[in-house]
Length: 246
Image (cartoon, rainbow, N blue to C red; front, side, top):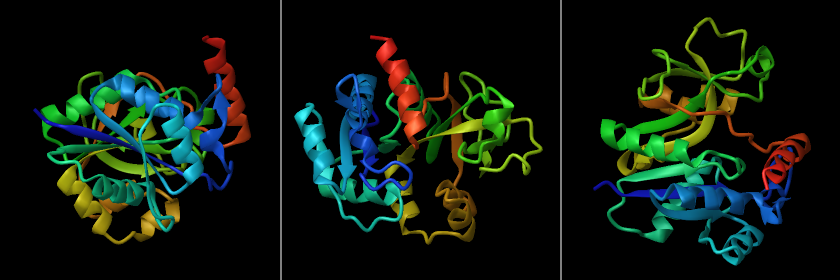
């Protein structure tokens, strides 16, 4: 049976909202909420990868597991690869990179992505959701993915492109990309050795490095778009939603 490890990269030095991993919702930090969602998916061990002792201590205090990494990583993927090497866990087949700033991610979407990866023997997989309105489509902070065919509940089509622009889009199969990735271990090892490409650096999208190097990324349909916490407004919005549910 395939074995999956979930790694959550997290750091305090976010450009637009420094310290966001430790902002509280229902008296629990954002990063610890993400950890618990990942744990609830019950698909494998979960570890937070961080360069900050404050995050490490918070995760451990809340019953999670974390590992310290270096502070010179250009991307979250580089960070999780270092964490994977440090953990030295044997017989892992897939590594799932879960963003540390999406505390309301649906655990069933995590489970579905993992199942599709295993059942289709894919190299790299990610999630995307239906774009609800033109405001989301035109927002450059919302990353869009274009797929080779319509996303449906149980299919897993190939990504043709990722973009922040709406003006570049002339394809009906356009969705809101959700920053969660599953990698075969040997594919992750290959990916982190690749140089950053011009498109990756220009768009600040590391998934373009994969496409530019002919690595296929399969896309699964998520039930909804989780709110990523990038700004104070995002934090207040998701805090209101999650605290109202209690």
